[in-house]
Length: 145
Image (cartoon, rainbow, N blue to C red; front, side, top):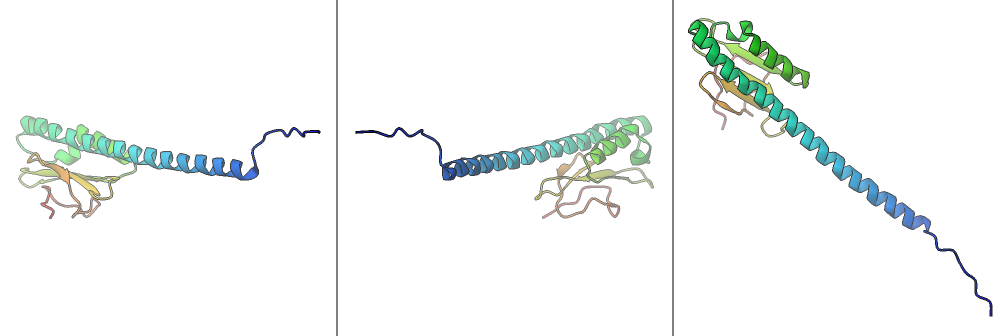
């Protein structure tokens, strides 16, 4: 009796299933990495806005008010530039009449918060009710519902 010895090999279906599983796993990893990348960008934006609170206090110590804080202070310009390098809008407005208040906001990647605001009162919070664009004219962060 003769026995035929067959070489073991993978079928086309088995190879396609393995390729599909590897593709699905790589898609899941890619989505997770993209989400993590956006969270790190949001943390950078919020940190840059937070540095404005310290810069505002130093500015008020030097000049006694916040007049022209958003236009003249180099720390503000630097923080706004860093946010705009992340391809997001950042706005700073100061009360140039009596110089009592200032506020800054920036859009973030978080789809729920959408915008982040800091102001001279020490507020630093998510602000989904106001858009941070050229129309932003507030000198304090609003209370969003």
